[in-house]
Length: 380
Ligand SMILES: Nc1ncnc2c1ncn2[C@@H]1O[C@H](COP(=O)(O)OP(=O)(O)OP(=O)(O)O)[C@@H](O)[C@H]1O
Ligand SMILES: [Mg+2]
Image: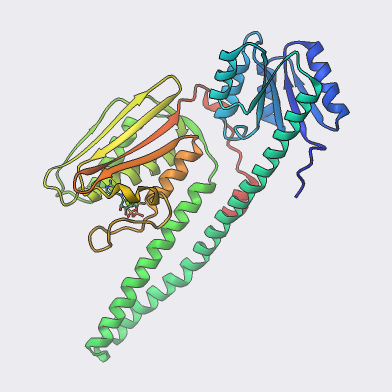
């Protein structure tokens, strides 16, 4: 594992040519490669072509200030992981706080001390490299998960088919016990096929590259609810959706997220005579929080931390069917959009699931659609 800092690239963004030159020279003398940009626009252009290991960013620049540049970098999945060190004035507490709030990793005050700047640069490059190794391991694990599930599915489907033939062709020759046994085999194999299919879905949403566009979540909630309840025409559900601001998100993933949330709300209100499902939203300057509340079976909050793990369930199969993959998929999708998700509930009273997403200001063209080498290899 190479955790050294040689050959690492640092992008320096500053409107002062003297400052740019001084920093570039310092870093170069210490074995680092540098890229320079005199304004935010140029910095974003450079970032769309290559990914440096670290960004040094001045706060005050004409046209687009450092905060806006930082906001855009952190909003783009391709660049959000690059550590950013801000240059601020020594007494500028407000800027420092704002920079951290936007996801910057550190700051250096101007006029900077060479030793301090180098120490911080090297430390953050090292952390970034270690984080990359971890990310790669996670990706490998996801691919492994996908491959295992994928390779298991075909033989499992064959077993299912073979038992079907057995039942059709040998039914008369089997006694009661034999027929019962075959029935069990069929049930169990169909359970495993469902599990494996959900695992594949989970892996797919973990690896699929994001394609951002403007998504009207209110409309999507209504659409998905309509589709899901087609299969349950006898259910009477009072369903309402409040105003939700449009978000920049991957539509397909949002659909899957909503489908999993609503299918839970529909399923766990099944035993209520008057089922109620309410979707609402609240926002602040940078985020939107969407909540889905139902008055269904609820769950014991003591075990709530388990629910976002794959195959973890709090209800028995006989009470409510399911595999336990839905919320794990939900969490992956929300995390991949830079958000957070949580769920609360009370036994017999219902559950509320909330997800918070960053409100991205950029146009969708900011986001690249490039499939990572990894996912195209795995899913081709
Ligand atoms: N709206 C809800 N009301 C009550 N319990 C819930 C609700 N949503 C989730 N849960 C609990 O969280 C567990 C995990 O949910 P998740 O959606 O991952 O799995 P599932 O619905 O059991 O199966 P799947 O979604 O894979 O068909 C559920 O088994 C249930 O115990
Ligand atoms: Mg579910």
